[in-house]
Amino acid sequence: MTEMEKWKSDLAGLFQEAAQEQKTTDAKLSVTKSEVSVFYSTVVRPALEEVRDELLLYSRQATVTVSSGMASFVVIHKGVQELDYSVMVRTTPGNAYPYPSKQFTNPSDGKTYRSEGVFRSGSQDYTVKDITKEDIIRNILLEYGRSLRDRVRRR
Image (tube, rainbow, N blue to C red; front, side, top):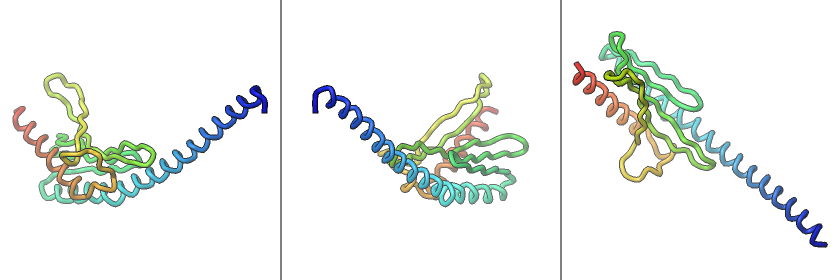
């Protein structure tokens, strides 16, 4: 093989290697997306629905919305939104990292903000396989308590 032919072979090898890496990445991402779907249907939805059902005892209306990319939980009492909470997941090929998010309006400037949090203290390398229904319920109660306390302080 001449020098001229070698670089052409090297170039072809680069494209073959990239195509193989893309196939591997796509396969890992497919598995990860499947894990996220299972997480939303078997962990997140049941947690949100359980809290929603319990809030009915306190005259609160809560809406649960779950899609392939997020789960939303909105609590309303006497026409006032008390909580806008979401469970989101950042995905990479091979890993899916869940995190809670809360949207709120600042009464002083009227602007809407979104804050992201964590489900656990300490190391944040947990994935959807590690977070339980209890972790989600505990975090909802934490954020809901903060929202209620903030509303009382603003009055």
